[in-house]
Amino acid sequence: MKRSEVIAAQERARQMLAAAGIVLTSTETANIEVADFGLHHLTSEGLELVTYVNTDRYCAKELVLFPGQTCPEHRHPPIHGQSGKQETFRCRSGVVWLYVDGQPTPHLHARIPEVSRAYYTVRHEIVLRAGEQYTIPPNTLHWFQAGPEGAVVSEFSSPSHDESDVFTNPNIRRETVIEE
Amino acid sequence: MKRSEVIAAQERARQMLAAAGIVLTSTETANIEVADFGLHHLTSEGLELVTYVNTDRYCAKELVLFPGQTCPEHRHPPIHGQSGKQETFRCRSGVVWLYVDGQPTPHLHARIPEVSRAYYTVRHEIVLRAGEQYTIPPNTLHWFQAGPEGAVVSEFSSPSHDESDVFTNPNIRRETVIEE
Image 1 (cartoon, rainbow over the protein chains, first blue to last red):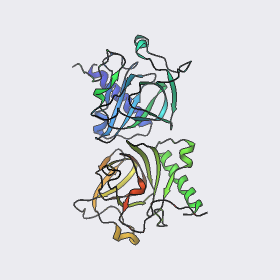
Image 2: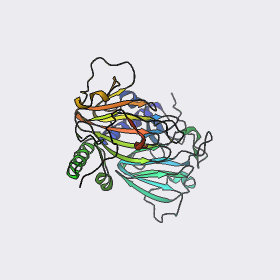
Image 3: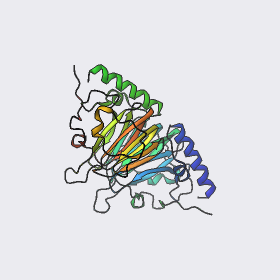
Image 4: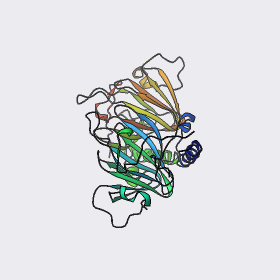
């Protein structure tokens, strides 16, 4: 991503967090993580994150999704002799459509990004509106997309090792690369 | 506590959470935990809590403190062969004065509840305003008090076993008893 694109996404995420009543320090604001997963179409497939704390015992983040933005399908495998990451998504504002392994839902609310269609394989839909939450078991494939107003989602979890996430799309690179 | 006092405290906590932009389900609202610690002066020493999730791997709660309300000094000892609870307090609204073991602060912002003065022994002050956070190591004595506008504090932690907390005040009973 170009640096200007990162800065614009950070500002947009900051505004959405503020509108949801979430206060950040100036350091946190300056360091909002913008992930395009190396796919180069951030507003379609991407995610904005603020990691509050990530110790060897637990982790807490805020996730921001722009309207219609999708976090690509992935799972959290076992690591360092422990079960994979268990995580609870709690929607704070907007609506998020979460998909996990299980009985496929006939008509999805989400629109699967066309260029990546083959890499969205689980179709059991869970709708989360503000105040609603869902806990994803370790090593379970999942992906999620925000509704038309975007979404702010709190994530409470066991320790986070983003670099070990397994994505269905082999073209994905989790670490954001910024072009100067 | 009388049931009417619990209901009034739940309503007050609900209003403070809503003002901080935090959305609860109707079930969560109806089950806001009101803890007077068996001391029978809730607005001086007490705490209101919403537990979002508490698995064997992590826990997340919202804590509500009325103006000047104090959560009594306690620590989280080792349990089930694991280290005591490690917890991160993130202030969402208002201001909270947190006290932990360490170099005593000469002039505390908090006013120690007079009837319980002997049971507040640690005096190292940490001031948390909205957006600021602090992680308390396992088994460390701590207590905290809200400023004049009250406070909403998110707690991210390892698993919570409230019944095993060790309070400095031997008169404390952690479980709330409601008189019919």
